[in-house]
Image (cartoon, rainbow, N blue to C red; front, side, top):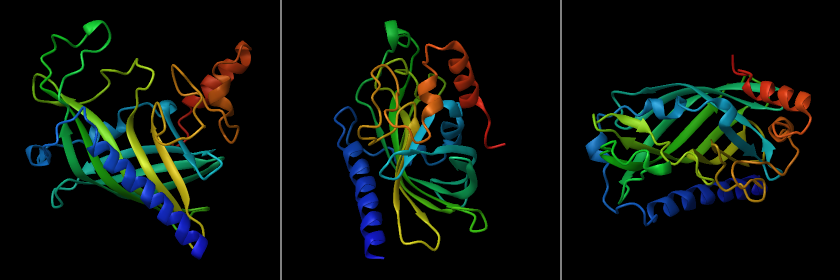
Length: 252
């Protein structure tokens, strides 16, 4: 149990540091904007990206985990809190989870990105923002290898000229682009171990030496990452098979 407590404390410290680092980001104003968005529904931010571009790992060996947030609904009676349902997959084991995401901070960028070739320069965007929060997702105890995901997250959005919230993909073609970054842990029911578990759109936060890609995510490990690697195979049959595998709707 001591080892489990140490692992969990380590994961929680990493999550707390992640949040602290985002709040120190000099690209964003120090003022808090949460109150201005109290009635805003952000639910579409977390179902925007095709799952083949959502990458995650679990444990010190960077075993691949796939996470799919399927439905998100703003809870009217709980300010800034969302009801979430989704599924996770490690190897061939698929578990459903249910839980909440609670928004804690919203900060506004000090400038507005214009994108590649100034594509967004004349779009009259009203502002770009980062959104921070905490999540707890519980898998069913009746399922195999189940437990609880817990940690913090950052999602980026912008407000268009009509005042509508949009998933921020303005800089999507840049090498370091990422969004919906989740940093935390997974703790199995009835066991004495806790594992670090992070995922994100296009890149994984705090992924150490797992990501060896320059232009885009490229895993250096082999635990579940074979089809991601094979998308760039010189063998066209292997490449086609890998691309098809990545597009499979495994959560259905």
